[in-house]
Amino acid sequence: MPSKKDSKIQNFMEMMKIRQLTKEESADFIKLTMALHQHPEIEKPLDQDEKMMSQLPAKILASRIESYNLPFSMSNLFLGMSLITFVDRPGIAMILLRLMYDHHKKHGTKFFDIGIWGTEMFPMGVPTEESLNEMWDSQKCDLSPDNLLDYPENWE
Image 1 (cartoon, rainbow, N blue to C red):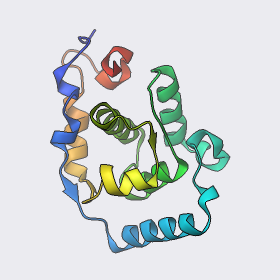
Image 2: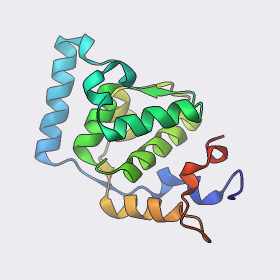
Image 3: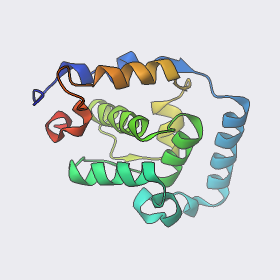
């Protein structure tokens, strides 16, 4: 079993190389923030958005936040923008969760909303595919096919 504080998964923010948003992604971000300005009720806790919770990444993230007893949550728009830009498979959803965990530990963020997404987590862009792959590979166990991110003790 991996050690309680495995150094392989402690520095994802440092590993992150970024890419700028595409024109389409930028337009989506602007549309979301403008819609939010006019209709603040569209942003809500992830678990209160039935449509979003029907998607696999949302189910995985909500389940892990609860089962690991993590001291933060996210909004439907935070996850939505992440899905639009880089979260395209379950493992990358776990990378997002670890980035959120690291951000929480450093800044004390309790609720990740679209504002945190754009101004604190990814103000200059989102992780490149290359850095996502590096993060994923770095958290693999050396002697088994296990993922260190699957062990609750690595979230303490």
